Image (cartoon, rainbow, N blue to C red; front, side, top):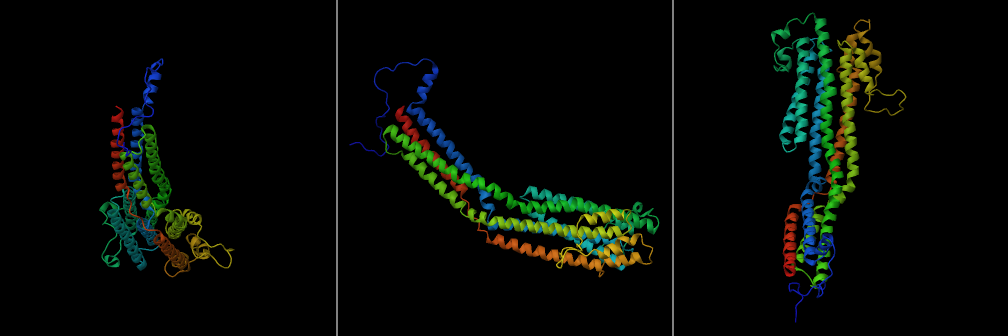
Length: 466
């Protein structure tokens, strides 16, 4: 009795009948007849299956990064890098505020030394953070380039501030703890500075150039780093959707193609099954299961991500608001100092929208300042003929003055708000499901086994028909 395990040759139901077949005119008909033969169809079916298996292997390997991005481990990495960007941004803004305030005071003023020390400390903290971040970003060329850009621009900024400090007048070494924030000036830089008034105007011009460079170049680059870090997850979410669909659809389509060829070969040859195609089908099903397991965490992460996205956007908005406040404070210092364009600094300050609205109601925004003292005392001080008006304005914006306290209070509120938002983002990140181990590499090897089964199984049938 004949066995039907699928390995014994039997008669083809579509075997040609005895006797000559009428010839068809032209080569096209002969080619069509050739392609309709069982051997040709076996080769064609094998080619389709191998292409499908190659596509499955490619999806399995390339879907690893999108599948693992939205998980607790990688999300926490993105939040950590954004924290570094925030530290860089904050340090740069603090340095600009301190450097701008220096030029309100004469070289002999005690408060000037403390401001220079604060500026120097902020700059060195940013440089340390940049060095550490560049060491940790070796595997991320894009982020490394952004960090290198900030470092190069910070060097330019420090050069302009140092020129302003040298023109304004040297500080006693003891006033800065025997540490000078700038290299010693050469003879050419020390000569020809003119009267104290002329030096003050020139120093203020340098300070304005430095502050403008900080606002337009350095802080912009720092904010770009912040946006780059915090957008990593947002972009990954959009990319992952397509790979999730491909990780399910492509293996399913490959499995379906294997079943179709298996059924066709059974009907064509009256064999119950083909061992090679059966092995390939089992392997394709295993690949599908492996990819589904690799993406199992993703639907829950995707559901929780819109809330995280809103929190990240609010975090970024608070960061930008803090930068505007500190830049506005620098505008006040520069406008009050020996600047050649105090009106320009006031216009810059007004564009930042930092003042409380007098008709704002009983609960004013805590991230804004009461600009009454600025309008009544500070901005008019340069043109005022009242004795000690300028000195009073300086006292108003520095230290314990009313305007100075308003800036400190608003900055404190924004820092508290930013800390709260950071904690909120961290909590949402911890709520994300942990990234599953991705089995794409193993799945690719299994597809290779499936391809071997296809070749072996169809080759056997092809040789029978030869």
